[in-house]
Amino acid sequence: MTQKIIRLSKSCIGPEEKKAVMEVLDFEYLGMGSYVEKFEKELSAFLGRPAVCVVNGTAALHLAVQACGLKAGDEVLVPSLTYVASFQAISATGAKPVACDIHPDTCLVDLIDAQKRLTPSTKAIMPVYYAGESGNRDEIYAFAREHQLRVIEDAAHAFGSVHEGKRIGSFGDITCFSFDGIKNITSGEGGCIVTDDVDILQKVKDARLLGVEKDSEKRFLGQRSWEFNVTLQGWRYHMSNIMAAIGLVQLKKMPHMAAIRQTLASRYDELFKGHTKIKLLKRSSAAVPHIYVVRIKGLLDRKALQDKLLAAGIQTGVHYQPNHLLSLYHDSKALPCSQTESLFPELLTLPLHPDLSAADIDYVADQLSKSV
Figure 1 (cartoon, rainbow, N blue to C red):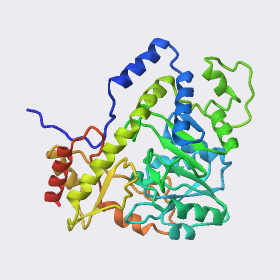
Figure 2 (figure 1 turned 90 degrees about the vertical axis):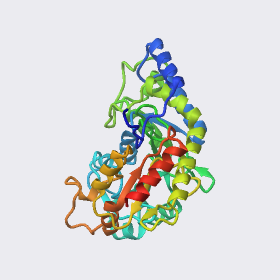
Figure 3 (figure 1 turned 60 degrees about the vertical axis):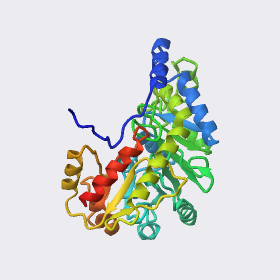
Figure 4 (figure 1 turned 135 degrees about the vertical axis):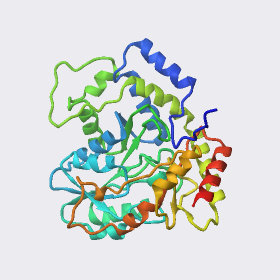
């Protein structure tokens, strides 16, 4: 008998998503069209301000940085402990991502450390809402106002999370979400940029379609711009109707799936409470956790632990390898990210997604507790 594998993460879809995709296939307009327009409208209604959809979360970050006018010579403060997509989105514009240290209890950017890395070239800060948590968001915005920085929120983990009674993305400067296959909602791939800045919105709309001006409106009508002008660098970053169809269904399911994620994460919290070696990250009850990460004090061989858990049928992961240690972004002259480097070897991501049961969580927690 094949052992059941408790997956670290997965796309949680059902017959509704499959039916929606078939409708698009039958419609025979697979590219960017009316389904994308509808998805944008429903996202805008959900968040209370305009949303522009793109092909993935990395593209959302890239276009947001570009739309802010950042270029070669400019610098963006960003926590080192994030997926490389955050750094790549910045460097794709020619700007420099400046790796900052993190708070070990939340894995969010440490603003005291960020202050030390400010230069006259610093133009923006990109906070990353690790695991869906946005605890120091207010301090980030105060820091940005003091130093006249744009704020480009990497909220890839935080769709549905609430900060002081307001949904992440519903307020602030610029917020970017990811809808890839394992995020809080998925459109297969996909992402969006949310802001009240009309100039940013228009630049993003044009840039996602190779810089062709006002082409979005034509696409939504099933038309093309045969005569047009281009005044800015663009990319082929638009969302397709197939992706939007999946996203529309997922958005309706979001409250239910968010509640499951919160319930399962709280169950882990309770099961690990008081464990001498397993330390939990601080998380608000209003956060919708995309991943569940623990710190295992004194862990010396994470790979051996992961192999042992996998033998017991449990997939685990590591979020994330510090970017300042990657060859492309390593700067030998930069200040060290000492908290990040000491924390990273002790981090382990446990299974979390809406298709897990309470029994699955109990089994994972029991196996980990006995293995460390």
